[in-house]
Length: 379
Image (tube, rainbow, N blue to C red; front, side):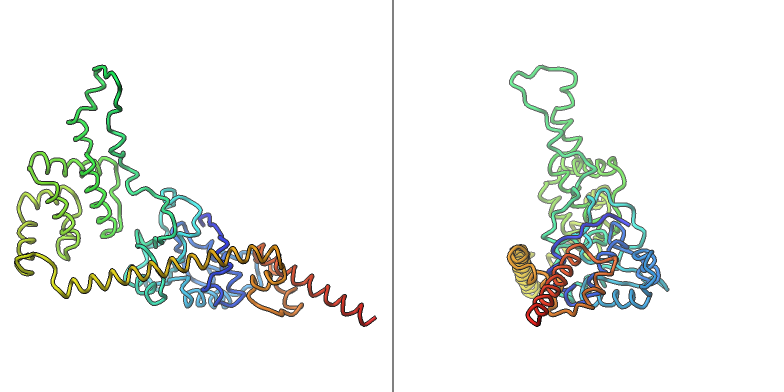
């Protein structure tokens, strides 16, 4: 199990609020069943033994019903591999306490991306991208560097000095040496190709030397093959988006070979001829792009409005906690006029969170005060 962060936003989570109060309280414990990537074996008896090893009163049927609720409300994605069932917490990246570079190796296979995207679309969940089977949200700052295995080009630049003194070490800072380690353009193309390989194969280049070899291939294309950098960028972006070529361009060396053979240029020329002399997209394609852009803008506005509404709700609850603790407790439990017996039963639960326990105690004290006041008037 990986370390998790339980954030205050779960107090106002609409999806958790639609679950039963028992499933709502059990959610943080079941969240810890996921690995660093948010995946786990979603079998009720396995989840029960991992999340509640000391609770004999929790049954497999209860856990199964909670998992069904989470899946129905957009908190949990489940998929089958043969006879085994696996789950993935949708908001795992918001609750992971470790930097992504420190995540442990996966214990499950990647969630099927096509089915995962359909699940997100069906539940109207706004996200930025899916990388390595993990959902990236716009409002969650990234914790991993795009190119952490390759030194930044800025680090290889020579430090200017007022009076440079020629020394043997300065030979490393000549333009030729800098170009060999990789210019800004070469590393940008390497990063773009690396992202394509990650999304297509689900794996990353294993060594720093391999990435430097890719950057050197782009350098050779510029220096030895005399290819315009603008053409390199245009051809690479076209190849990784084409249905056929995206599976054939998985390394910079292979990309350079196909450019030398002229195959990619010929494929682009055929597509331009098929589309027309201008080479621009068809009206139907342009219309699809416009619709997609409009949808993305609407999703971004909706996400921003949801974030602002959540922020206002959190501030309102914080203020209410100071001014009217009873009202705050009712908001936390999302229920009014809870009987004293039910409150005491909820208080016995060992897996209840601290702020829920505080809210229950406030309501119990209020009930006792009202009863004492009523007995005083009767006497």
